Amino acid sequence: MPKKRRHTTISATPGEQTEPPQRRRIRRKILHGHDIGTSNETIGAGSGTRVPVSRRGTPRRRRILDRYGWYEVRAEGGWTSTRQGEAWNLATNRRRTQQEGVLAGLNTISQELEIVDPFTAYGTDTSGINVVVIGDIGRGKSSWIKTVSVLRQLVAGRQVVVLDRKPQAGVGEYTALATGLGAESIRFRIGGAGACLNLLDPAISRGGDHDYGLEGVVPAGQEALVLAVLTDAMSRTLDEKEKAAVGAALAAVNTYAHAAGREPVIRDLAMRLLDPEPTDTIGFGSRWNQRALEWGVEPGLALLRLADRDLRGLVDAPTSPAVRDALETHPLVHFDVSALPTDGPALRVVMTAANTWLANRLAARSSRYQQTILVVEEGWHVAGGSTGEVFRANLKLSRGLGLSTVSAFHHPADQPSDSPARALMAEASIVVLFGQSRADDATETARLYRLPAGTEDTLMQLGRGQALVKIGSRDPFLLTHIRSPWEIALTDTDAAITGEPHPAPQTEPSEGSGS
Ligand SMILES: Nc1ncnc2c1ncn2[C@@H]1O[C@H](COP(=O)(O)OP(=O)(O)OP(=O)(O)O)[C@@H](O)[C@H]1O
Ligand SMILES: [Mg+2]
Image (cartoon, rainbow, N blue to C red; front, side, top):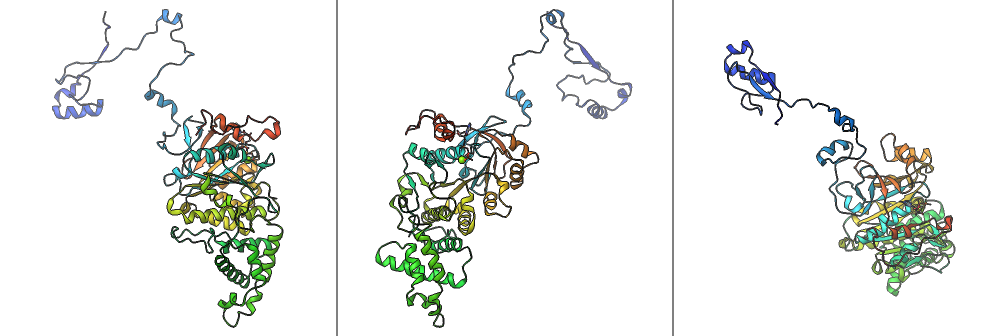
């Protein structure tokens, strides 16, 4: 039997009956929210008539159904549509439409896949391409860099250069990764048993500019590099006379070596400063050219000391073929500097020389637009001193060179607020913040990147492999870093502590490698 519908009625009031029809229509529209003839509900137009409007009746609760629990809350879920479900997810951001770039993991809140890629974020989300990773010891910084900034970037066709500082089982911690990919590990050792990167390599132009490079993209040249190394070695800034002597001697040794068909080295420069030719100082004028022959004595002695002791075999001989051809032989270039002492100038000089060499090589071929990533873990080794200034100046050219520098730090609160390391941290466009256990580090991190109030607590609660990521102007988001089985084996750094090494990675990525 068809269900009966209840009807409510709208009647015309006595006043309405005398009203002109036009006014009555307007009044009804204001009072009842609809006009005669436009409503879905049919209302008779005639004055004084009772017009039926259909309404659904209140459902009645039936006892029999009640007895069988029909009206109880169900434990299992019910089907709904995406349209209805939307209302439950009010706090979730709009789904991002970006599809390009390397995947980093899952958004911890929305469970969506997140892309963290400086090259694809540039222009829309960021105005720079440098990345900083900060977090406590053992939180997963290196694992992130090895996967998101190295392995997956190689798959995306980028070149990656790693300055590997941290020893693990007697070699650099990226050695397993390089071996897994069939790339040569180029080891630097004091004394000449390892590779050498000539401080005066012809690839590093004297003034930093290159014939076919992009206009305005001028990385540090030989002169800036030598002056920075000397400033650090002599623990004082060089005066104008010394700088002039270094410049003149550098020009002379370059000309001489070029004529002889070989590379100049810093020993040549040291000897030229100590024992200059009268022609070297002609440019200073007849009044000064004799006296100028004396100006280079202290820088000359300092360079000789570096070549004989602290930097012996590292930067004082022609560049090794492995280094010279590194960019052409494999997309991953692994410079293993883990054997160099952290005290003394060797580590910083080699890292800055490698950075300057790379910047010059890229500047010379910048018209080819190869996107390159430079990984520098433990970033404060390159941040300090005059060599650090050279490094940071090169960093500022990242956009012109297509060179994204990824550096890692821990304990930001330990760095003085005016320190170069802080400056390096502050200049990054993409920041990946892993967990902090110390409140002062969490507070300092939040302050450094102007994160919303309360972020300190979030940073202190993050587990291993979880990070707060800030990409340029985008709101920060929580990310769970995801690794494939192959990546897990390659990024394990606990073996030395647990004594249980992961199975050795195969040369070819196993099925399901996550890139
Ligand atoms: N997403 C993750 N999930 C679970 N474990 C992880 C994750 N990422 C890294 N780990 C593990 O945590 C350990 C430490 O990781 P990693 O070496 O990357 O830390 P780190 O922050 O670089 O440490 P350090 O400051 O000492 O260099 C590794 O053995 C790694 O396997
Ligand atoms: Mg690490």
